Image (cartoon, rainbow, N blue to C red):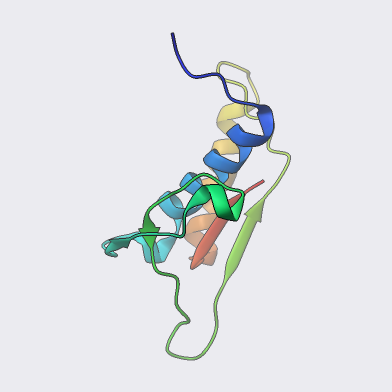
Length: 97
C-alpha cells in the first residue's frame, strides 16, 4: 500500500521538488544535502545550492493557485503559461505554492 500524506505535505514536497526541477540554475548544478527535514519541519530534499547572479540579483518566480487538473480543458493552457513565464523570466528559483 502507498504512503498516505496530508495535503500540506503534498504541497510542501511538490513545491520544493518543482522549484528545484524548473529553476534555471538547477540545470547542471551539483546536488548537496539539506538539513534534516524533521528538524526543519519540511521533507528532506537534496537539490542545487542557490546563489546570487554575478550582478548580485536573484530572481524568484512564484506560481500560486494554478488548479492543475489532469484532463481538464484549461490545464494545457495553464501549463503553456507556466512555460512561457519560465522562458521569458529565466528565474533562479521557481516556486509552486
